[in-house]
Length: 449
Image 1 (spheres, helix red, strand yellow):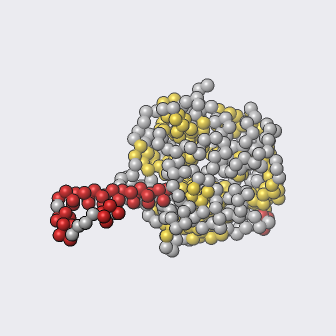
Image 2 (tube, one colour):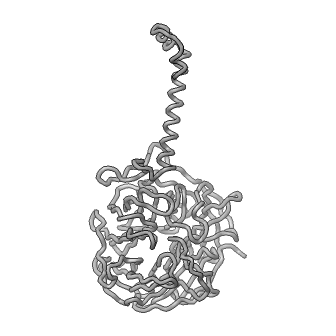
Image 3 (cartoon, helix red, strand yellow):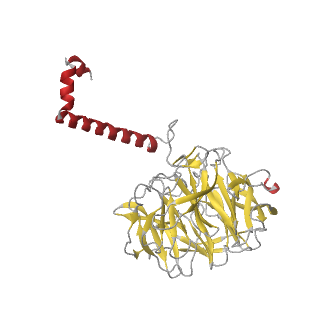
């Protein structure tokens, strides 16, 4: 611009230059270049600086709490079918699905061309042998490795799974993918929000719990429960309800019991009061009534008991450096009211969050650990057993007996379904199963070793 200011010109000369084909072409190139720069800068402002004041965050609710719809200008990404191969001996199992007869799925970390990547494993003989049926070479696993990774992952991550039957299932993290052929191929599901924190079945249809304003490790925006559409171009549609927690959450999930749905959210224990619990009532998430037995504290974990409205939950966490005690409460009306069944009767090592699961109204299992927050620095030993079992609906608990003893650190994933209970600890990457509802446990590798 300064060079042009020193060059004498007249209106006639400029008029002739502007009309010349060469000048018009040059101007078009300059405008195109400026447009590219603007797009790149805008993308960097949204993706690389998500907390910049005033920045637009992808999928964040705007105007009256309505979630911004994701871009639908192109067809969804598709992962075509891959040839099944025996599971690698180096596979590290992250999470397990429910069992469907002899079929079960696992999400694991494996290696793709020398680089860590997530892969879907499948057994069709009850866990005796496992095959790798699909790997995701482009997924971000930068923060998904190890035993202290956060639940909320960076963009492009896949860190958990939920299968509805032996053919239809979802892999999720920041991305959301669906398969309808038992994991051979996948279609990416467009969704509002930044991260998909959970997928569950409610009212006969798959629902996603999404969060806005997320960076690795936490979300400060709105949590929304929305239905997942079906068809050739699936998308998360028809937001059911949403709520904005009081602060940053590091963990949130859906709990269902019959026709009832709860959303539980947690913050880092040292990160403030963002924990909360809400119950779906009509088209709103209303604060869950805190059971008097919880002494004003939020519910830490809950599980539904089959197709009924019965639930078991733990609350009133009393934390010491080595152990945390919880009270056990139950509900027969989907979380509307609660009754105390055991005050301070469950004790587990202090690490991560507690997770509970139930195969039926009587048999309940609880574990601590999980990739929810940084390890607390306390030195663990093999005497710190992070699993407990109840045979009376949570009225009393017995310490589990894993054989051999798992490495200290707790269990990262827990799944209760017929015929028994299964759990995963990332310390050894194997699957632990219990045939007597959480009392005795044995260890199994997914690859022949």
